[in-house]
Length: 300
Image (cartoon, rainbow, N blue to C red; front, side, top):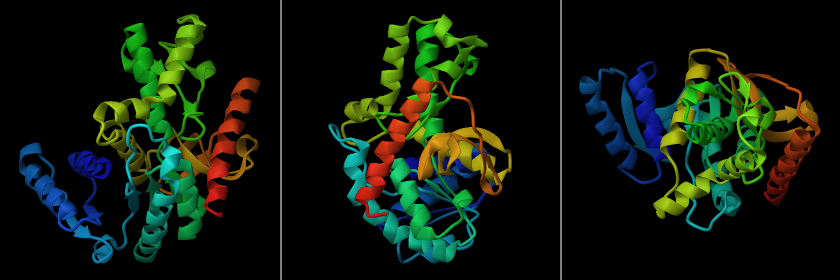
């Protein structure tokens, strides 16, 4: 659902041709044809085709960007980490083909556990670190902004925030950098309410899984992916929180962790370092420890 909805969002923006592939024969072809037939009504004119993998990987050849959404979804009661070994196999099998057919692409990872899967894709692909990036912080930040806007009864556009760290239950919403209309959120909400919103943000994905019962979130994740794709394809150089490979930034080395990054035509063009409080730095190091434990479980 994340992949299909992402394809729809990108098609409606009209600046790229799209290839959709899936392991289920006919699924991507059917969704692609359906999207193509919506073009005359919505007003886009890009090409959209579908295929079955691994048979049709050649259809994806020479892609500028590949969005990897393949993986087992969470079910009620499951954490993102419970998907580790199932999705490890899926990433290993498919990233090799992606690198073979599109050796110059930017690879945008979206499956869970996100940061560990991005790390795995980086190792399997052999790509430079700039061309592998994980979608997490844009989604988590959107959830945080949504909950704050609802609490304060203001437009989400008035809420500015960052959520860093691993895409898991120990992610790090930076309350010290969160403002509403330019006013620090700590001056607008009592600590207990702000703590409750931070906790809801961390469990935002699970909340939707529990409600849906047979799937996980796809509308907000696909919107986050589309924003990242646009910044890369159009070289917009937006600074967005995403999972990037760190080599000493924020005191973390040889690991994918969510941080502010400048996204442009080259992928992750710069890691933006901001000053963190001692508490925030400690929280970031804790979430990095959780990611590293998963990476080690995979034998990397």
